[in-house]
Length: 70
Image (cartoon, rainbow, N blue to C red):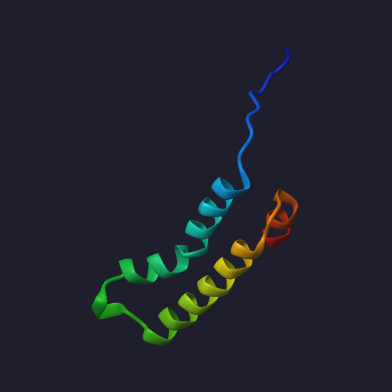
């Protein structure tokens, strides 16, 4: 049995968009918990981490650089 996978090219820009959305996941999780359960310190820390990660993603210019961020 041989499995043949289709291959397709993903542009660096498309990959960056996906990675930036994933970087914001922790913020979204905290916000979905509801206002009554919101820990503002945790939210600020998550936002700061997401902002830093997104800046690294924006600075990347190749798939290799994006791989290094994972």
